[in-house]
Image 1 (cartoon, rainbow, N blue to C red):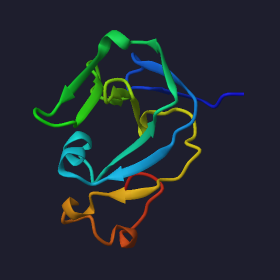
Image 2 (cartoon, rainbow, N blue to C red):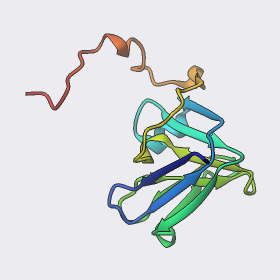
Image 3 (cartoon, rainbow, N blue to C red):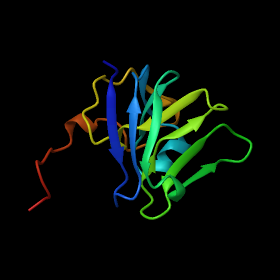
Image 4 (cartoon, rainbow, N blue to C red):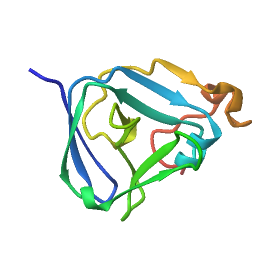
Length: 135
């Protein structure tokens, strides 16, 4: 049986299903991915064999490509959530791990582009951890 994952955007307008395996999972710390996420890194799954089926909201997806680069981000035009994108002339499916509603069955392969990581992205394993919002 083929592996299936489902996902959606924050507002629920965009829903999708992925059929097939993810081949890699990278946490990218480049400045472009930090801008995309507003965080320390992007967490993206990659596949050259999985297929995406848009269940709803495909018409709400916008894609921004940084001029003169290969860097793209697809997002819901309603809520701004990152959603999957097809890159490299259809050869690569890129899925933001946080967009999935089903559990991710692989662990990240690597942190990449560490040479451009945020200056505050060191020693985060030593920062206090809370199960909810601070009280």
